[in-house]
Amino acid sequence: MTAEHLCCDVAVVGAGPAGLAASLAAAEANAVVICIDQFPRAGGQYHMQPNASGTPFANTPQVQQGQQAIQACEAANVRFLTGAELFWAEPPKTPDAPFRLHLARDDQAIVIEAKTVVAATGAMERPMPFPGWTLPGVIGAGAGQRLLKTSGATCALPFEGKTVLAGSGPFLLAVASTFAKAGQGIDHFVERQPAALWTKAKAMLRHPSRLPDAIALLRDLSRTGARRHMGAIVTRAMGNGKVEAVEISPVGANGQPDLQQSFVVDGVGALCIGYGFQPVIDLTTALGAAHSYDLSLGGWYCGVDAMSGATSVSGLYAAGEVTGLGGANPARISGQLAGLHAAATCVKETSGLNDTAIQAIVTQLNKHRAFAATLAQLYPMPESFPVPLAEDDVVCRCEDVTLADINAAIAEGARENLAVKMWTRAGMGLCQGRNCGASIAATLREAGVEPEHTGYNRSHFPLRPVSARIAKEALTCEFSPD
Ligand SMILES: Cc1cc2nc3c(=O)[nH]c(=O)nc-3n(C[C@H](O)[C@H](O)[C@H](O)COP(=O)(O)OP(=O)(O)OC[C@H]3O[C@@H](n4cnc5c(N)ncnc54)[C@H](O)[C@@H]3O)c2cc1C
Image 1 (spheres, rainbow, N blue to C red):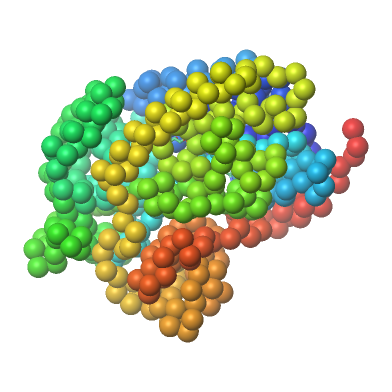
Image 2: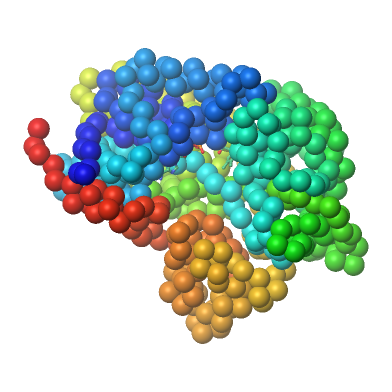
């Protein structure tokens, strides 16, 4: 087989709120647009489309808004390539040359030549190791949500026993809401931040339009029947071959768990745990864009020009969570901004790109980003491990690298994620450091190196696991001049 070869003006990677808005804006500005997503259906995380009708998730406002956005894109002739995973990307070799994107879809290699690229790759869960985190039944909070949303008519997690939802951040409430809609109970809800109701209410009053959503989420949490433990964390998962019990401890004034006050919940079948998200920066780093570090934005993110979404690489734009966490609204608006500008760089006759329109978009974006900043203040992400690890705890589960291995590398002089990777193989496995990068940085931080100096895990070929045949076909694809 040979690779399929496609060309376009604007290739949008990611079909979430940011990618859909970018695709529509670029297509309406007369660009030929291809929108790529690894998932079988467009929509991304927020607009995730159901895989079965008749479930409680088939017709939510998020799904309906997503359907409308997808239909609008289709009507504007956006070509969707779903179920297509981008595993490598090359910047233009000369100023007039296109970007080259390498994809795998249904056992077929696809190579796209694009004049401009919009990276809308979103965010992913930020796994934080703790004793017992690799036991089966311990999953990300987002994974729990996805399992429920895609479980079809059963609408249940595939685990027997009590369910514990733990971690920190407003996303936990969104997950609890999914549980409530699925009719799946939660036994224990464990939130690292203290209740601090007055502080939260005061902060929310600055964004009154968001109050109904917040109240609905709290109501949904009540509907799950969960016993709430505020200002507490799960300090250990225990079990023989799978999670059977979890230890919960209050967090002291010093931010550390007070193990003297801990208690154990038995009969657990599922622990869904999440301490927030991090931007997915593998594409933007592969293309050589400049990145910055800000924990309140999820750690390392792709820097963009505030008025256009342009990155430091000519022709590469970025939008949504990859430019710093903010949620669905900033993702959608920044997508529109990036799509308009991406189209304008390669299409002579564009519409919608005038100073007044752009200023109005940027004003909206800043308003929604301000709300995200409020949430980030209320739920600060832990920079270090929320629970002290033992030396034999695994940090990189792809390559089975323990805390002791990483500490040994640091003792020998490793001061950056890359150096730890060379010493220990942490970050060299299937996930290419997407899962363990923040944990390696947290370990380095305990040795006195601040995360902005540890760097991120550099992208190497291939970004995602792919068969050698597809990789070869994509990389050796010859292009006939058209
Ligand atoms: C697990 C999870 C669950 C979430 N659930 C909620 C929720 O319930 N409510 C809420 O308000 N917010 C939720 N969020 C936050 C969410 O990130 C934003 O609200 C919103 O979806 C961001 O839009 P986006 O377009 O930037 O990214 P996304 O919606 O994440 O879209 C990015 C898309 O890029 C695709 N992609 C990335 N890399 C590649 C690649 N190499 N090849 C092909 N495709 C690729 C992904 O498949 C994804 O569909 C969730 C985030 C995560 C990570």
